Length: 179
Length: 179
DNA sequence: GATTGCCACGGAATTTAATACGGCCATTAT
DNA sequence: ATAATGGCCGTATTAAATTCCGTGGCAATC
Image 1 (cartoon, rainbow over the protein chains, first blue to last red):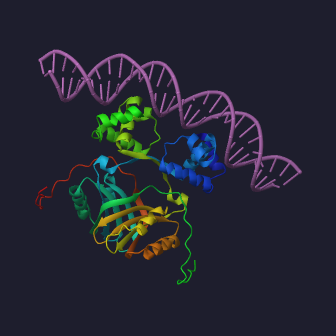
Image 2: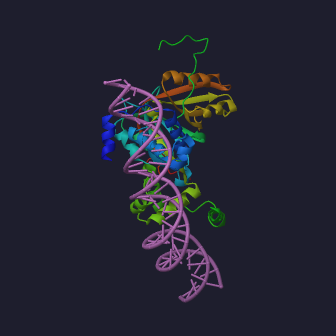
Image 3: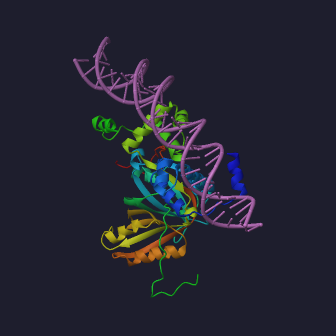
């Protein structure tokens, strides 16, 4: 481990750019991180040690933050998904509001630009539990209003994808942006 | 593998309920799915084969949907996160709209109850790419309007958590719900 | 209330995969 | 041109996953 840290410090402080093979590796591991390095190497056209080396580098560089099992929300009694928009007095992010991050129902907390301040993604067992969570939010100092969007059905839900998309040309009827 | 399938068919069609040890196992594996069964067993108080057996059962039952690496969005050039609300004529979910699920920028597609129809979670390289995605959405037949919430900063973002929360009592000033 | 079957766990053995090492080749910088 | 660097492959070693079997608790049954 020591000489690995040295390697980082010596030549690749922020790690070099992700190339096409790296993207394919990430694509495989996002779908299934349990594949062996032998199979991973086969899929991307590398030997097992080479594939291993690249994955190790992707982990070191931070491109791969970690590995996690994907849990079925229904299996842990959290079938109800909802997005909650919160308006706050001043600029949110108070300790009281951050305290909700301790609750396992809260999966995401963002601050957003637009006609709201904060955006939460939460999963609860039922509407009663969601009501309890919203009640807590209402009682939080600084919160002026909330809006909830209860998810009826989910058609797509997946981790961050490594894929790239073709750039979109400016439509003909629009002038090109300066930048 | 054959006798495993038989086992499923024979006695545990939908698998038995998740118990406390299962929840602790899921809690460990959500944080880091690369731990060995030896360490996993240590953490939850089981022998390595017993831990392995339970994880295998959690996979068979579907509680564990899979294992994925967590990718840093910035590493794959998608630093810009946004939530897009779409209003549609009729009840959305047209083939044209579902086609956007093919784009790697789109991470989630939900239909929601509330004053909107569909909700998308998208990650793009920059505002130009987001503009291109929104342009595509505008041109999709049936889409009447969209609202976008660009995320300024994210304070929490994690997979589905196995943890349970204490039930919330009905506040004193509210009458108890019938159900 | 005793008994019988049934899971779940633990320990040992085996097989498989992860990891480390050395050499080769291509690319790059001097 | 040449030396150095980084990335890859083949092999060897080590560690972990997986299997096998015996034991014990638990529950349903008679």
